[in-house]
Image 1 (cartoon, rainbow, N blue to C red):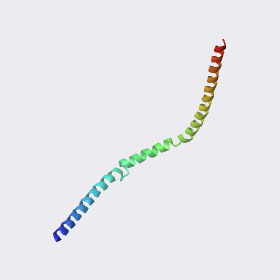
Image 2 (cartoon, helix red, strand yellow):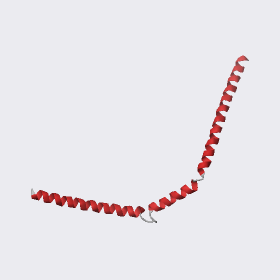
Image 3 (cartoon, helix red, strand yellow):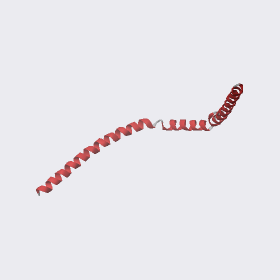
Length: 97
């Protein structure tokens, strides 16, 4: 009984040592990815901020473009209705001839 308790305690200690080793390795890997100003994560963050700055002026233009395209769509629906009316009138005229 005492032997099983000692073995269990040893296994628990080994488990926590392995767990600590793994966490240290993961931490060092994460530090190399994003822990310094020259890391990959810092470079990605810098690039994304540059993209955000460069494209920030597009929002009002896109809103204006969407409004214009909505008006164009409404106009095209009207053109479509007029073309349908012309076709129907031409078909009726052809029947009477």
